[in-house]
Each structure stands twice: as structure tokens, then as C-alpha cells.
Image 1 (cartoon, rainbow, N blue to C red):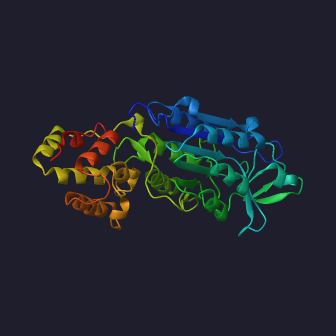
Image 2 (tube, rainbow, N blue to C red):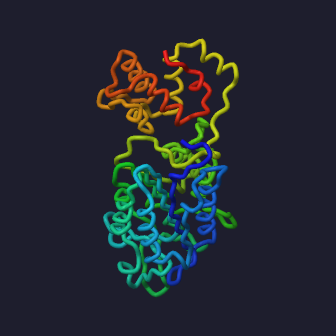
Image 3 (cartoon, helix red, strand yellow):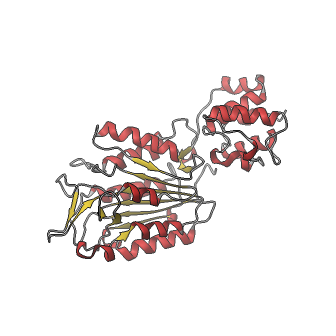
Length: 366
């Protein structure tokens, strides 16, 4: 990972508060998009290249513009990139709540012709499928209460009414595919809260704190997808107990992939005593301890085993990352692990990912 930037990061952020034909939403919706965009582009935090962070707000978030934005995102990312899509605004369920379609309501949507003026879950999923980034994370905050009233219906004042939000089936559809994940602000039967006078919604308040570094509890210098969701899912109920619970969907996600840098790539500070101790310990034990901390989900985490020349099919499955690393390194020590993997190659890859980690830097090839 580049400690001075995350140029492989790309984002499209969409926010609509001032709808043309549907009830408006609080200004916090627009703040959410602007603040997440600023966090992603900040060299002191997520460190995306600013030109790679695109926002569509209000009048610029038409149906055509959103679909074009998704196409342009797909055109500029490749398999080594990370892509984020963030939507905050109205969502609506068309048909029965249990198996009906869900739509994103853009600024120009007309509830009298909802199927032709909104973006259906099928259209949205098809657009996401064209994004060939190796890692794609979708954020959906689409079940806001209209205005100041707590309402779970979306109306235009002309007799057209739909259930507000997004269905569980739609969330699952949008998360389909290898390396894909979705994070939504609340369950399908809940409302995404915005406190009166607050700059941001409850969900985005927690998300921003996570991206600011709170989700990087091991101070690894990276914000990882599972860690980010774990943080947000723990913090939102603290802000609004029992009323809102973020959800996470992924059907083919094998690794705790990096979403961005944390605090510009800042890693943990290790004491001189701990560093010098690494000289005295068995190098295999030191490496194992470092790998367990830096890749907590095991040899599949960040594809480190494969990148070091190993073959994952040669390893047994284990219930925890710690057990997986212990078994994998025992296998490696006896000449197994497949391919061209060895202590030197594994240490080299780990050092490339965490170049400032003192214990790794002090290790010598046995």
C-alpha cells in the first residue's frame, strides 16, 4: 500500500434532498455526500486522488446523470482498483413489500410514472456489474423520513404513494458478485434517522468517524470493509438505541479488503523495547504474530498467501484467522503451501503492505 496516497480508490457519491416532484429531505443529506467526499479525498485520511471522487447533488442527480456517472465509473476502474458508490436520498418499494422491486428515486423522478423515471434495482445492479473493480462497496441510505415527519411512505401529494426505502431482496441483488459488498443505513422496516439541527444523518455520522480512523482499531493504516461495518453497526445503535440497525450484504467476499487508507496510511507506533525483542525471538513466531494482527482473517486476507506465491487449496480451513495462520506457517515451515511460497516471499509481501511495521522490518530470513 502507498503510505502517501490511495490512487486505486474511486468513488461516485449521489445525494438528493430537494426533489422536484417528491417530498424534500433535510439538508443533512447533501452534507452527508459532501463530507464523505471530502473524507475520501483528504490526504490526511482516506487519501483518494481528488479527481477520482465524483459527486452528483440535487439538480445534477437526474436519472440520466446517475446512470451516466455509473458508466463513467466503470470506464475508469480496473481489477486492481477499489470503487465506492454512495447514495443518499429517497428509495421506494414498488409492488408487494416482500418481493416487490425497489427503486432509487432521482431528483427528476415522478411517482405517477415511477418505473420509467426512477432507477430500478435491476438497472442499478446491471450498472454495478459493469464496474470491474476488484473491490466494490455500495452504500445505500434510502429510507429517510420525509421532512420532519416520521413516515414510512413516499408520496407526491397527488395520491401516489409507495413504501419508502429498499427491500432486503434488492440489497442482496446489489451485493451479488465476487469482491462486492453493500452497507445500508437501516433494516427494511426501519427509518434512517436525521436529528433536528444535526449536520449529518446518524448513519453518516458513524461512517465518517469510521473513515476518520476509528474503524482501524489495530492502527494498521488501512480502513477495511469488515472493520468499517463492525464499527458503524456498533455505533449507530448507540446514537439511536433500538430504532436503527445498519445491515451488511456480501455473497462472495473472501477477504477483509481495504476500502481506503486510515489517517493517510499512519500505522501503529511500536516501542523500542518491543522492536528489539524481535531480534531475540524465533523469526517464525514473530512473523506469525505480525501476520495475525495485520491480516486477521487468515492467509486469504488481502490475498497475501496467493500474492506470496502460495496455493490456498493446499491449506486447510479453520474457524479463526489465528488458527489459519498457525496451521499455514507450520505447513510452510515444513516445505508445504504450494507454488513458490516461502518465508522470504511471505515476509516480502507483508513488508510491501506494511512498510513501517518495526517487527517485520527487523526480521531476517532464517
